[in-house]
Amino acid sequence: MTDIERKITIRIASEKDALGLSELAAKLFYQAYIGSMPSAALESYIVENFGITQQRVELLDLSITTLLVESETELLGYAQLRLNPTPVIQDSDITAELWRIYVDRTCHGLGVGRQLLGRIGEIAREMSHDKIWLGVWEKNVGAIAFYKKLGFSVVGEKEFHLGDEVQNDLVCVGSTTAE
Ligand SMILES: CC(C)(COP(=O)(O)OP(=O)(O)OC[C@H]1O[C@@H](n2cnc3c(N)ncnc32)[C@H](O)[C@@H]1OP(=O)(O)O)[C@@H](O)C(=O)NCCC(=O)NCCS
Image (cartoon, rainbow, N blue to C red; front, side, top):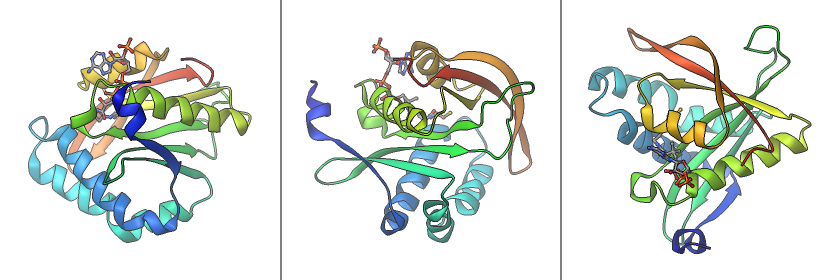
């Protein structure tokens, strides 16, 4: 077990975490993309998607499971599994999506993302999903390397709208048992 693994716990979030998740999600989205996209678009995306009311709605949504990474003093990351009503990938029955996964940059490269994704896989498997899909910005080389390392393969592309910006996301699929 690494030092960071000893310091953190991963738990399922509840409605009570709306404020913490709202602050964490805004901070980590900003960290991840500042400098690689226009800051005005980034800021409006954050306001539209990570407000406390929106987070409360998402935490109460039974199709979404949110995991939080916490140390004794702070939240350090989160991941969300979302069950889509219909498959996003044509001719597939894959409806479980790794919707978001973000780890604080102070902990990158220490195995936290691997643990989080492992837990998301376990939860998806318990819900009888043996595969999971995700969309990742084609320019997010770090995340793409991470997903490939954890056994995901690129199977297609889709658009992602961030304000007036239209970006290209790679669509990837992985097994919920892959490590
Ligand atoms: C992507 C992210 C979640 C990965 O989490 P992490 O805790 O840094 O990843 P881990 O330390 O668990 O790495 C797991 C494996 O992936 C590899 N990996 C992780 N980040 C990598 C990178 N940037 N480049 C190359 N390989 C990488 C690691 O080397 C490791 O492999 P190893 O165990 O064989 O050494 C994290 O970097 C992050 O939050 N990034 C910013 C937000 C983001 O882009 N989220 C995804 C949006 S789609």
